[in-house]
Length: 488
Image (cartoon, rainbow, N blue to C red; front, side, top):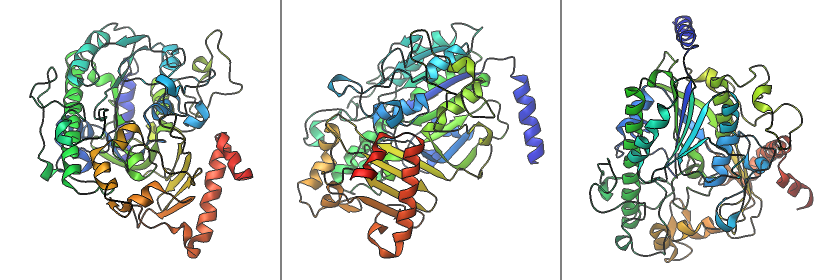
């Protein structure tokens, strides 16, 4: 049976050799796997669920840093942010951006003959490094409108394949001062009236029926915020559905690879900006038109550093023997500093394992967080496999910093005002703010990360083993923070 599937896949791939191999990368903003296909019984996400049924759902997909700009820099470079230079946010006074020698996915695909366009949230720079040929217009809170605005690009030139980077601002929470939730009805970009966004039929959720993640407190305030978050997710779902309709209507569905994911977990303390599971674990669906086996659930541990090599592999720009970019896409444009040697990535292509369920050798991921907003210096490095997860809080004597929108979140403020012993999810407020140097969790037995084994003498050997893994990862990826092992 397996041989038959491989044969069928080969024949389908052969038939597509003369066709365009388009790519749509659909990325949301601050979304956990709040989707029916991931087992969330409250979520109304029919289009996301259908995409999963027509492709591969990765159960263990992880971003490398739960911060918008830094995470997206990894998505588009295949390099951890400590290496590509995008340590934190780009916009305003934060001022982080990538090094001049960095090459990005849209630039490399353009060199392969692709038309490239982006719509919605971008958040990376400088422009010449993260260059897209077209910047499409449309409110990033209005995903159906965004999809409609992409149709002209999709049908613009039938002689070249296209790469579309579709980035919503949902379900990122809105800004503003901390206040009672009922006085801030648009905290997640939602509006109290139906039909607030063109083409969207708003889905309203009963706070009593949403699912509260383990890292959040089950309180009325939290449930009210989650109901708005769910509403934003359902709005995204309709944008995805409309985009798929447009691809099908214009005969592009059967030669377009679609990736659906989010830059990191939901915008609540315990999720966004942390390296706990609530921050790093993301939805990840890949629909490859050449894949004969659909509705596959893949248990490989994949990371955002794997995205660029995978999409280059699909487009024909990856050397299959070395896993590096082919010379024709690795050459720097005139005036740009050239990186010596083959242009390599920190990840690898998962294209060959899409149809598998339990592929061998995909059992470890790494995470690297340094900043979110510029005042939020709190470097963390992580190794996680099937058994253990080690977090190194490099600046652990500092109190854990808060993103301005997360500090203002009513769910956090409600618990914070109760005092340091109040529970926030599985931790006290005190333990959330003041963290130890090392956090070691038996992630297989303790998936909610409640018992720190770093202080347990019985796990001293394991601690040293995983510290060595983090340090080797830092050396291998040329992490400037590796020097902290030597003088602190």
